[in-house]
Image (tube, rainbow, N blue to C red):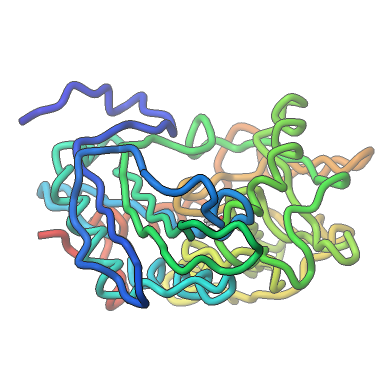
Length: 340
Ligand SMILES: *Cc1c(COP(=O)(O)O)cnc(C)c1O
């Protein structure tokens, strides 16, 4: 079957594909799980996920290679991160094998929707873990749904690998110092909606959040981590427990060091030292790498490299990362999972 989709002009929008995976947790264990055609979830109006935010999610992609095969990029890392999120929010963990099996089933069942190689588009996969059931008191649910659905997507930030302008959020934090910033949970996003809307209305791609305790250090961009290449050529990315540990970021740290031969460090990045960077980028599964052209902070305007051209080190990192994801560049051992 061929599907009628304009692959080159996909945005980041929901699409109701033919199949998704659904598994229930009850009486202390997960059921087998199965594919279903129904895109509606059915659960109690009192579910803790709805009232108290007891939920977590993941985001990963399936890539079509030049030879037409389909592959996943480090899905075991997504499984492990969802397990950490589950612990943080008192939810049962989804075992790694179950997670990867669910993702594989969904990709295979919707294989017609994995975009062709060369279009830059991918199949975005969204695993979701939610606490459900008749619980109105504030306590963990005893029943859970683990679902995985997918949709073909283009670039998350409009324009893809095009330098974008960002603004520092001084009026809103996305996370608390000892809160859930390091977990992939909806509450962090609910807390960031206002800042994001204001940033977009003011003409920026998104807001950049500071460390919530002192507002002196860069944490991350709404749905992407932050990194910079210093004028000395060092890859630097902020270190803080309230940053969501991006798999793309840790992959870039590795590639910067082992493929580009750069010094690569996670450490605190002070706003006052932003001008140490020759190049700045935002990275994540959805964003891939978005070059940061400039960062506004009230009256201060930091400019990096160029508003129109992609900086050279960011370009090399992008080519390496995306090359690995689409199967054109040899991947470090264990990074690629073939879907077959
Ligand atoms: C998912 C996410 C990222 C990116 O993580 P990846 O694993 O690289 O996709 C960055 N920041 C936040 C807040 C996120 O939720």
